[in-house]
Length: 259
Ligand SMILES: C[S@@+](CC[C@H](N)C(=O)[O-])C[C@H]1O[C@@H](n2cnc3c(N)ncnc32)[C@H](O)[C@@H]1O
Image (cartoon, rainbow, N blue to C red; front, top):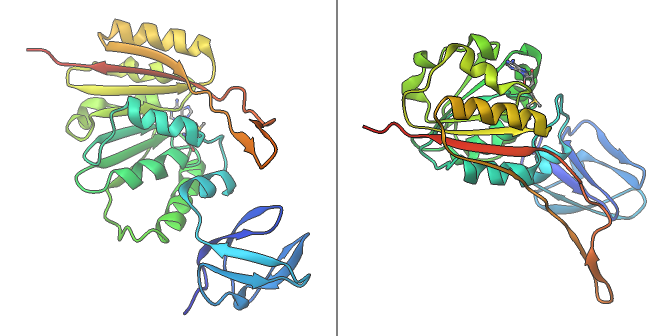
């Protein structure tokens, strides 16, 4: 089996690494090393130079986005899952993502939007979009998705985006940019639309909420996802010492076109 270029997790006793197999090279950790060519199948176990057993398997989405090389800060899995609910995403949603960034959210949305769903992702930064595109291609190549997805990149500043050019291609907007209200500089909404903004600061939330109210959005909700891991073994059961205290707020709303 030719495993060259395959995306894998290498799990040692103390760590997890994301790696791409290069059969001409070795994989070096401070717990020992091995030659990639020694991986004969996925999943499998290889022995390191220090006689440790390293587990080799394919990454989940969560492992991939948390361990991948990234540019801008990603949206964390706990927030991604809530965004999917708040934006009422299904396999047939037509999503505009504002702020491609490192492509973490883009990638998860693509996993869902197979079938009649579609995704347009906008970012002012060519560099970020180029990197995100590579990340997405790398992950999807391991997922058997057979290019059965619709993804369009738009390299543009938000305040220049013309919604009316895409109105039939969008029923949901998800933003991860500092000033999502710029969308409304040029655009008036006159069709059904779900809206979710991910914002780190409550002052941004307040401004964006006012903007959605002004634009006659309904069901405006503000929330924060607080997730706590637990440490559990035979003798101890307690919340983990590690707690990410704050990532971002979610502001969700819906425009309904009534007759
Ligand atoms: C925090 S990152 C998005 C991260 C992404 N959600 C993820 O999970 O990987 C924000 C992105 O928004 C882009 N951005 C910021 N302001 C913008 C604007 N006014 N118009 C278009 N893109 C903008 C930045 O270039 C950056 O790539």
